[in-house]
View 1 (tube, rainbow, N blue to C red):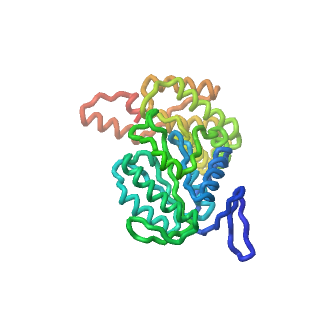
View 2: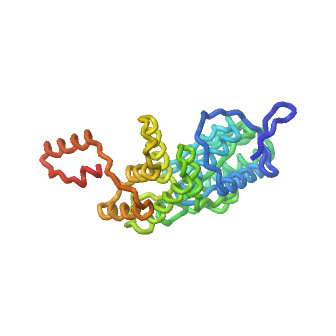
View 3: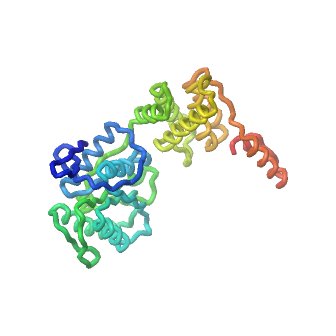
Length: 333
């Protein structure tokens, strides 16, 4: 993406041969995406789609940055991006009202999990989307939606994101062919987790971020393969970012207390990792996970994080209810 100030003092944004006006829609100081080759590919596909008057369709598994990439590109172009979570309860009229609002105010609509809509709704919605895209492509100022003439702001855009139909994602439909033609697809299957982990750790203040990021990603990959497959286990990018942000919080707490000189960065990362993951494990997986940590982070002593007040309160409630106090259960809570 390249930003230029023209002679008439308007700001424009260019990528390859596509050009867009910057619209100065300030959305606050949002956190930035880590820029990876996958992000670059996504931006290129979406900008080329908009140049041709089409929409964008990032698709792939959960937690790969589909929605965040659309929001980040909208932020770079100064657009307001509104995210809508689709489900079976949304009908054609509801979608039509959303489209009217988007084209009138020049915002972008990002429809998450678009293929969860009913098949009949998908077919009807494709006609509304085609009407909007025809107006944008031909630079018309009005189009007809829900039986009324609606003003069209040329900065508006429609994007959809999808999880694959099947493969553990229930309630997803396959898109009709007439709807597929309205969106340029971009596959987002494998985010560059090592690069993302490294950049986030550097931004949180870690000096040895490259090695620590690589080790964290290795633990996540090994856990996905070696631990028991449970429905609630998540070894994706969202869970990884939670651990990375938790590591940053622990480092800042140590800096406030003035004890960072003796602090080992590996120990901080391991503590954040165990804090954010141990509570969801089955008892057998707890010991396996600790063994994995010892293999990847050799020489790190694993300490239990004690919450004395919480433990005492739990024990008191157990006693009052005449329940047996199981140390493992207290520790897990």
